[in-house]
Length: 112
Image (cartoon, one colour):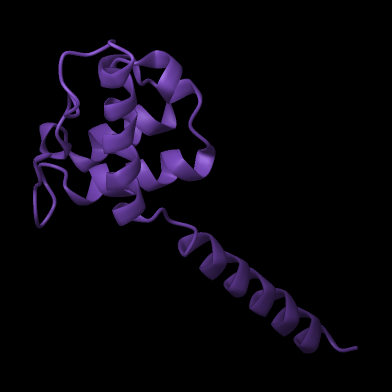
């Protein structure tokens, strides 16, 4: 095989693997549902006064949400047992929801 073919194949593999990672983002609709259910569960167990989430998406910027989820620092959210039991996919979905409604996003959001 010639070097051109090998380089072309390797480049194509790199491009397709990069695209796959780009599409591995969370689902913000599922994230909103999961985020609310974490607090609903906490409230039912008597761990919070309200079933509404303690933190609205617009309380942090996109960069701040990224730091929270990169460091898996969920202490401000309360309900540590509930957060510890979430899967990586659920965390990715919640991140997508909070990021899409961040203070510096096109459509900052509050939990209703």
